[in-house]
Image (cartoon, rainbow, N blue to C red):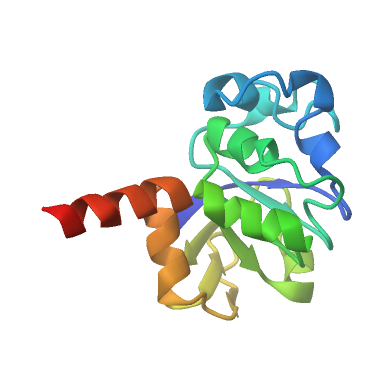
Length: 167
């Protein structure tokens, strides 16, 4: 899968309460959650986001509670991929289960600036900063995870597989 978009750079240890504060957990509607994405970090942050934009963050993105609402809020805000130095383990799994692509880039995230345009090829394991032409590689995800994300997450993926087996 290829993703291309403008970077919204965040810091380290961005927790799930920053991604979607607890007061908004009364719904699982992606659009509603998307309108409040990152309100725990900065109210109205999402107003700068355009569909296809990409979050780039430091270490331990998604730490804190195990709320599945966090990846749903990011997707609802129009972002399909997050690049970070590293991810909290429970967020990492919740993101793929919800259909959000994650890329662990390690220290190379320090080379990416807010406002950069980047292109990510998850099948090749490469990330390119368009303006500078700098290329970085990352460990490719197993094909199963890519299929899971392309299928919209775990539940739609399993539903489609079961329907195909019954046909």
